[in-house]
Amino acid sequence: MNLHSAIVQSITESAGNVFTTMLGSEIASGEVSIETTSPEPNDGVVSFIGIAGSWAGTGSISCSPALACRVCAAMLMTEATAVNEDVLDAVAELTNMIIGSVKTDLEHHLGPLGLSIPTVVFGRNFKTRSAATTEWINVRFDWDGEPLLIKMCLAPSDKAHAIHHGGGNQTCALEV
Image (cartoon, rainbow, N blue to C red):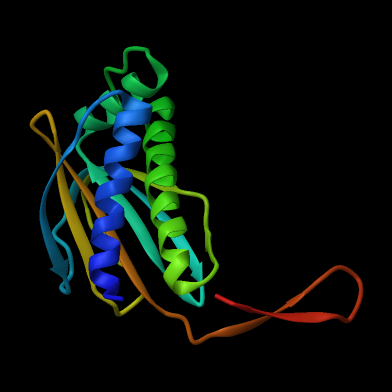
């Protein structure tokens, strides 16, 4: 199995399915690239969701405020003219659905994986950075002329953590 190809295919299929099912629209996939350097400053909305298991990493969706408002309007069937809590929640849910679907696809190859709760950032001229040293797979999409970027970094996890449950002295290993 080529993990890079599996991730690109899963992101493309998942985004297409979510846009068709949840937003009633088609989305065109475009350029695929690998990012190994520090990303350029962002303007807009970025949503992150962590992935954990025997492999660990992050999935991310980046878009303009206008596209975020369109996502919200399509999901909630209401007008969204400015980025507000509903818009940020809609982008978080979009991230959860797309990256959650990718996670499910990848579990067939990588074993059980978990997802964190999405975190959404909105602003101007901000940079994002992962503490991981791995590369990011970038898949660009176009929704009626508006760009959408879905990114994922994933690497084998070699850390084992002990988790203590309740009041007993039992410990179980959990790879994160």
